[in-house]
Amino acid sequence: MEEDFKNLTLEFTDDGAIAIITMNRPKALNALNSETLQELGAALEACLEPPETMALIITGGGEKAFIAGADISEFKGIETAFEGREAALGGQDAMSSIAAMPIPTIAAINGFALGGGLELALACDLRVASPNAKMGLPEVGLGLIPGYGGTQRLPRLIGEARALDLILTARHVGAEEALSMGLVNRVADNALLEAEQLARSIIKNAPVALGLAKEAVRRGLTGTLNDGLELEADLFGLVSSSKDMKEGVAAFLEKRKPVFQGE
Ligand code: DAK
Image (cartoon, helix red, strand yellow):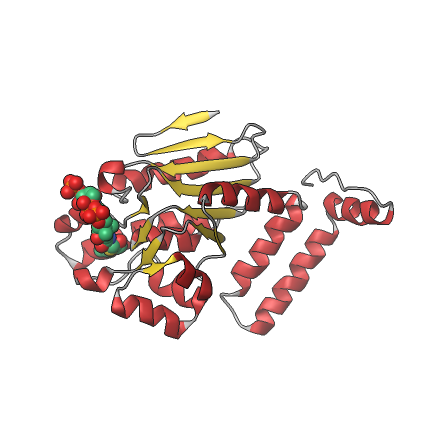
């Protein structure tokens, strides 16, 4: 199954388990203009429609870029602080929609992931990079600051000092350095293929538990340790009432593979 938009494509693997969004504006190295951000929102909703969708991968079309940033040609139209704030909130909404997806999300970074492109990858749960990937937040070189969540998600992921190194120098890092700083989870010759394998290794686990584990980590990071521990206990209570949990435990005790229903 494939759904077409103007600036991206949405496809599903043959079994329907993995949705793949491919950003597709090759002339602008897949830069995110407002139309693309709108389409992305619609694609995120569409990829959850088939009930069998269990994971989402986002990648870039073409050889060269994942996403080379927000579309710089649209910055010209921003004159006032109000317009700038609105633009940032619009982009942040799109990234937050990715972060809030109830299924695991993986960015397959197959080239440049700069500015808004890296911010999109940061909104995903996991990141796989190809050896030619180049990542960075070059905004200060353009007289801007990151506006699609980068100043908040990057330090939470790799720590304040490393994040400030990338944000203040505006430099690009390659795949190996990104791996060493925890910016990406894996480096592989074929980032998309690796992302698919990673998704498969995740979705063999209990769907209810996956959703709740993701929620515990994501929501827990926004509060204190004690708040997070309380949240974990609450969600542990919730997962304990799932059929998936009963099936997982029974399968272990009966020495067989579990068959999860996502209930
Ligand atoms: N936007 C628009 N077009 C872009 C683009 C971008 N971000 N990146 C590349 N392109 C276009 C180029 O203009 C060129 O178009 P033509 O000249 O062929 O028409 C085409 O893509 C191919 O690019 P190059 O010819 O430059 O290709 P190279 O291989 O030589 O260089 C490059 C690749 C990725 C190093 C280079 O294209 C580059 O530096 N691109 C810009 C990277 C960048 O600075 N990205 C933006 C980061 S800032 C905000 C909210 C969010 C943000 C900002 C404000 N507010 C709410 C106000 C976020 C900002 C960013 O993302």
